[in-house]
Length: 156
Image (cartoon, rainbow, N blue to C red; front, top):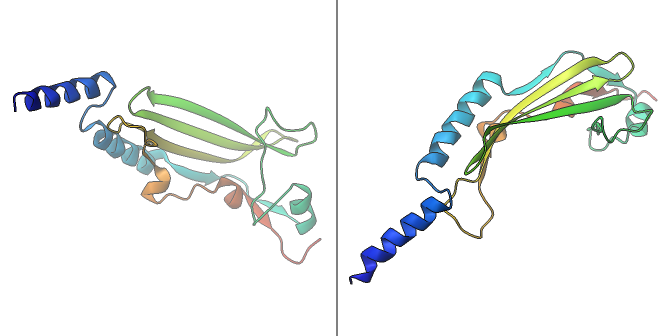
């Protein structure tokens, strides 16, 4: 029985060395929830109406228009997305703020902005996939493409 206290002490010390701190995950989930409530979600500045043929030409699928990142967009892409990730907490758990803006290339106008926060990890060390928590878990809609583009029915 003398080995049992040593085993517990060893396990706690090892978990601490691997970055696990009890309560960290709950703390950061509460912080993410608060940041999502204050700043998260989608803001549409200008809704773009597309005909069905424009939608198809842009590669639309399931009422979503795929918007390439500025780096991967072709030279004739009419819309691009800029994404910026800011680390709030670096490690165990990782907490971030991600901002996406959709821009019309022709006049460089920002059409919409999406802000989301998330937490990855902070779990007891294991080989399992780390847990996560973010604005979608709070119930915010993070469908920037669907909110930015409207497909006009009956028009070609």
